[in-house]
Image 1: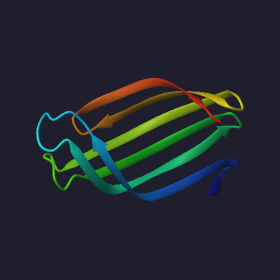
Image 2: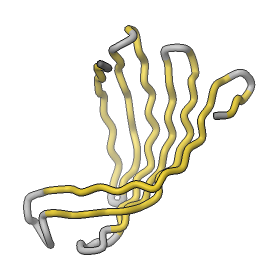
Image 3: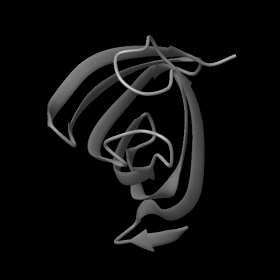
Image 4: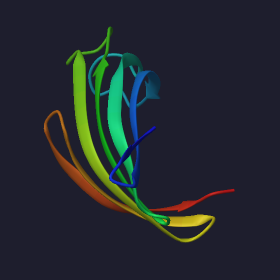
Length: 105
């Protein structure tokens, strides 16, 4: 990681792969995908994390062949093993957002 004005930061780049299973709407129901993912994770406070990420997936056997996603996530941990997350982002054909909870074990 790197440090920006005393704010711990981590810049990352990954090669990712997924294998999705879904109802058959069009094309095969088992969909492998490969692609790059990159982002920036900032520790704003000891219990508050910001994450900015983007990814591109290529589906060799499905149409459309590509899927893009960009997201901004804010994760707050009031307890060591529990966190809330607020996220928003864009996907290939629209916008999404949500609120989630995490339990770390």
